[in-house]
Amino acid sequence: MKICKLSRSIHALCALIHCQSLYLCRFLGSIDSLEHELTTGIYPMSRLLRIDTSAREQGSHSREIADYFQNQWLKYHPDDEVVLRDLVRDPLPHIQEATINGFYTPETELDATLMEATRLSDQLIGELMASDILLISTPMYNFSIPSSLKAWIDQVVRIGRTFAFNPEKGFQGLVRNKQAIIVTASGAVFSNETMSAMNFLEPYLRTLLSFLGITKIDFLAIEGTTMDDATTRRSKELAREKVDLIVQNMTPTKGDTV
Image (cartoon, rainbow, N blue to C red; front, side, top):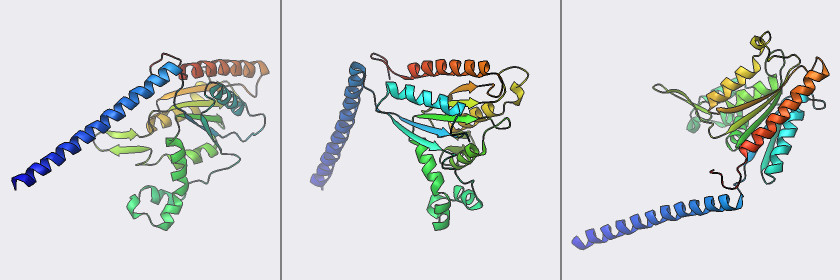
């Protein structure tokens, strides 16, 4: 009996030592990886999820600045991956009753109908969660966002997947460690005091993304696109300058702490 107990103790001790050795190896491996990044300037590949929503595929101001951001980003990160969701070329369906029922049904209880109803939502959420940077280009339609973008939002805002609720802590966003870049285009100038109260696009998207857990958000506003060319041109110049600054701040250089 004593030999058996001693044998079990030895096995347990060996397992503990093995486990600690694995943790130590992983820790040392992380240090080696970090040292390699700092000394070579080579950093892990990121993924950019781009969402385009303008009905104009040609001559779109928001798409133009989104193109500029993407090109500037890839200039510094040529190995990064870009996932494109063009909601005009490939429109998403609005959620249906079965979709909502699927959202609020435990995963273990989903039948074939509900699984099919939430399949697209699963795919879109997977794209969002796998991304590091969210780039949305959107025009302002009637003071708010296009219905195509709202369709995407309704598919990805999902309890238990992108946000949670706790009776004690309230709502908690589950989409963390990401940065959002929002390019907007509007016919009028909404940055002045007279028109700012009619801008429901920016506060809505800021509130929504913060609710999901994305708190690092930059807006690039192209204004006055139906007014004089000088206003639009100046807006684009400022947007490009801001893009350059954002990309530089997001790009680690040799010696930075990641």
